[in-house]
Image 1 (tube, one colour):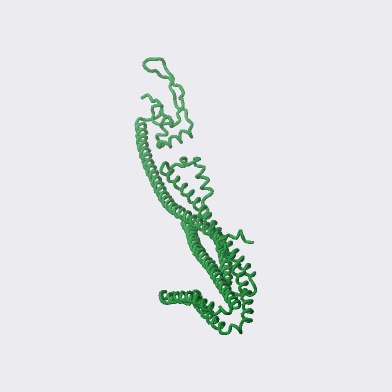
Image 2: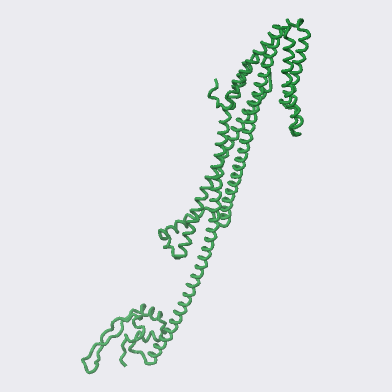
Length: 468
């Protein structure tokens, strides 16, 4: 059997090199050179052990010309066995590798699912916080707008009180010019002083309320800015988490992220400032505390706006009542002075008539008595009507009732005086002259006071520009 080394399985692994020539012939041709292997011993042993040859097979391969047929078959059979074992080991390694890959992929999938669930929960929580923050921002902004409008109304109400105060002050100053006999603290004077006090108090309260409202608005603006900053941060965080979910659903590779893996490596190097569930709870609680704080501030703003509105209405009502009372008392004072002046004038005329014509005095007095009958009847009728026809709660001893009684008493007194004067006409001429002079002076003073009060009531709705 002619042995060719290249036909032996594993010959290339044994590192066989070209052999040396030997003599021989094939098919009657000229002798050709045969080759014997020239191998490096260390390389040969390493290659043989690598394919699992026995020592006998290795000796046979070192000297193939001495190889026996049974050794040759045994070497080949050993190679078959070794090849089968290597193949089974490779298949087993492949199965273990596939199983490990599947386990790693399953673990990675579970981790991604966990992260995806955490991201979804985080996004849901953040969106809830964003919705709450947006609601609080809108609500707080509306409350701030209402508070600004309330502060503006306070300032306007404070400005509206300037003209009534100027008019009231002007009236008080003008009434100081009355004659000395008329410088009395009458109801009109008391009402004017009370009006001034009410308006001054209202202006102070309006100023204090406006100052407090503006201070509260500044605090609310600070809270609004904090809410807005937190809302922007939460919106940015939700956007980032949503993009992470999109990237996870699109691809699990780091290269799918923006800038490849640089962003992931940078985020890994930087890392979050805090970690764990406590950080998430702290994040949510901080937003909730800020939201609760804004809700409390909003309630304070609404409460302040409501109080300001009530304060404006109450103070306007008080000032209007005080002003109307002053004007009413001023009109009553004018009417009363007019009646007194007219009465004085009548008395003077009567005295003049008595002095000029003592003969006709009696007749004139009787005529005057008859002239008093109709006013007395009217006054009595009015007084009876007010007593009988007025509702129960309205039957009071008001200034009108007193005026009617005073009028009746005055008419009765005048009538009695006329009777007395008729009986003692000759004895009272000097007294009549003295009385006439006193009445003239009194009438002059009352006429001046009446004219002055008329000027005070000439422009009740003036804004103060005409005051001097």
